[in-house]
Image (tube, rainbow, N blue to C red; front, side):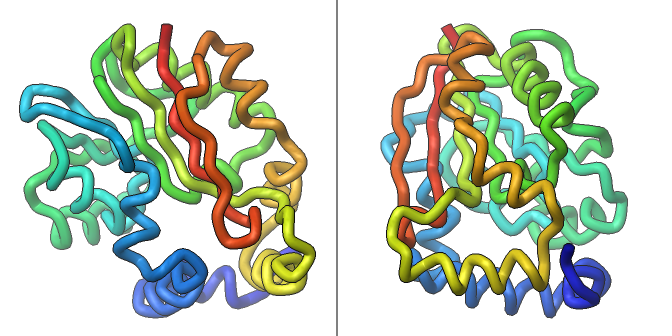
Length: 208
């Protein structure tokens, strides 16, 4: 699946930005989109944050604004270079989400934005285990990602978007019960909200 548009969106950051801005219109724009996973979170300046799969730092600035020290992690050095320019107040580390280069119980909050749908089921399970490992007891894992629409009117635009830009892993994710996977890993679901006719999900899960 996916087309040349997926390749172009990675090669040309401006194109990715346009696509992201258009997609975010369903929830009121990019600013609101990036704030959705952070709703009702109260962090102090001493609490540490990991922006998992941070890409070019699109959401990192919002994390810098709400809490303490922010670390952005991504597998792509090019993406990290863009993030450093866009949000110099964060620290950046190159690494894989399924093998995090951090110690146990290091972060108060782990955040990721529309990255889980890029992962195979095996990778997803490894990532959830790693997130649990690096979170402190009581820490929060929060994310926004694709979801199976509950309103049939949102199926056509989602299907076109996924055909143009996504791979089979995105289709696998919308069939996956992420809340059940998180509970299996030891998390407690604090908040699960659907937006854009159910095509987007926001979840906050707490480590016991």
